[in-house]
Image (tube, rainbow, N blue to C red; front, side, top):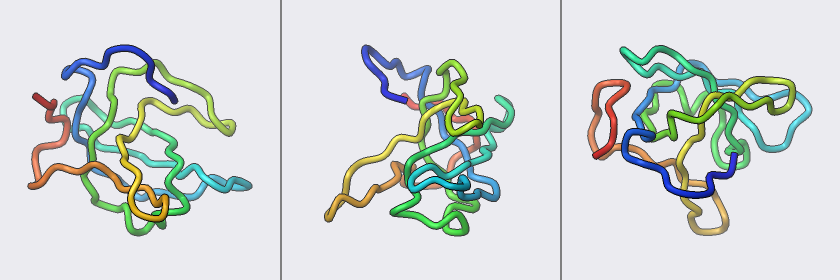
Length: 108
């Protein structure tokens, strides 16, 4: 995904990762099933494989662009986008809430 244009607060929500897995024959995407509480569960693919192992993501809360249309990637459907920042050495850093919040919490 590449988001062009405005993203509103209603588009951003916190979700918690369930058991993630590597996407076979790929250098970047990780398949993340996510719990968004009352908003249900969704799957996203995110290019974070070089920075995070799937087992490091279990139970991790993060911020996601929540209202994107589904997109096929690597033969799998992705329903959103993980917000990240580039850290030192080009490693990806996941944007997380400072404290745990309820799954599905929208940002303000």
